[in-house]
Image (cartoon, rainbow, N blue to C red; front, top):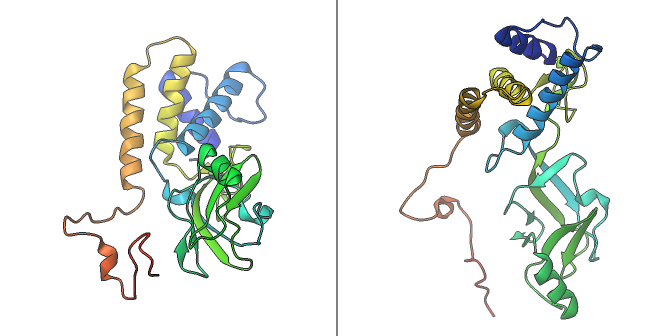
Length: 239
């Protein structure tokens, strides 16, 4: 379903006039529904505790020996970094972070001169690191992209943050998006939307639970022990 067909579906459900165009329309009702559609996309991208499979990306950059990394450290379409995924691949060690502002200021006041690990935080448009990492290391992390829409329905990867044309399609399940627009429309009109909201929440929770594979949990311990190669327990360094 495209942006237009999603809105046409919602209008059919609600007994509204069905528009033949969405982004070129000038009537208030269609404009309102168009805005609710993009509101729905914006909220789904930020659904709590959910990493949507089609929004997960990997980003790598080369470190510089400075407390502020260059602009390549932050992916252009980054919504947020997935916790505990950042590693310095050159030295095969995790990068600690994000460091909270209080700890960061303490480090700045009493600099950590040497460490087997280095930490990071985002402040404004800056990617900050401390202690200063080695220059030339390859650093990688996974993040959630802000791009959730395929332009004109023909793009092979999501390339827009929101719907911009009638033929645009989304990474999200179309029925789920339509249900979201429906309850938002009812809420906007001060009508009872409780039942439709609950249907939408159930759909989102179901899709979130199925959208990517889940690890097998074991009471026997960390499954990483089955991966070949030497490992040293966290923070237990010889010497």
